[in-house]
Figure (tube, one colour):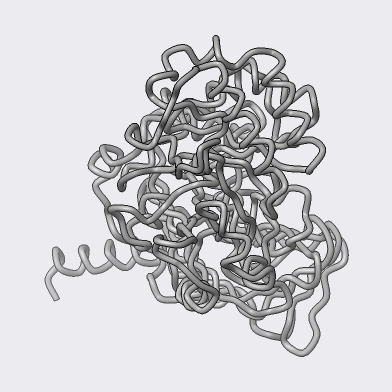
Length: 457
């Protein structure tokens, strides 16, 4: 072998020994946690690591930047915690949630959440059941999958928005950590594969969202539930909606239109729909249409949804005519003030229906909408809010129609009502909750003011 070849061989061997290979490496041999520094109540039994009540494991050696981390885990009962990466301890770095607790007050940080950056309101796995989680970092791209299905796809932009509290949640390099924040987490296997790919970071960041102007990342950083409670699969498929959700960081509650003359017309079709949606990353809501929907669908079937909502846009007027307020040809106005009183009374009547959320609130027909504040007097607002309070209903702030107005929202908040943010899209463009976020800021709405869906999984 000539000297040049020998020198290159030695050099390459040196580089290889420093960087290591890219084959999978087990970080748990099923017998002990020797590769980890343990803190608190950590035990190994029958090939399972049990992490209890604030305990943590921090990898002793390694400095990983790009990698695929594969973990098989389960939460026990109300147990919850996280996996941290690019950290030197469990206190910094990015965190990925392990949380399937449906009773948790902080219901919007479920398993797979990239905490404070892409929080997930829906868990696709149940507590006490084993699941596979893959965390992949490649350049500036972070992908998180649960049981093989992507739940987070985040690209860190050139100028990430981070509050002081979350300033360490930035891509760098480091070790892994696993911590229980409450109860018990169990780990069956942990495996890491270093990645040697060289992604075009500049090209990746062209696809990133500009967080200097994005209000959604600010909600995540403030630990505020980022959920559009009212979207439909109109002009978009479930897969496309899921991809859009991952891109923008907005969780979606899908709502089929249920009623006579709508896509779902009976109990059997509801059951078929729910079955089709199993495993999807969406909260499931039901929109009751018309005034017949409580009789059209049984209580047992309605309870298969995480919540039910309806509006007061459809009713029978004083002369027995069917009215749909959004269709000008079905709006029969002889005296505007009397018609406004009729609308208010129909809203109050709707509060007696077995729904959770009142949506498209205080909608007015086109011929009256330009005088919205004039028609919605203090007396009329108070009458509707009293009905909402007495029947324990939730108020939607609607992004599409930008209703109700600020005065009504402030009154509702003072009365102690809970809120949802909803789009009611007419096509595949869901928007980004612009009006809802503006009302949140102007009216001082907090996470505690938001409605918690009655989720089952």
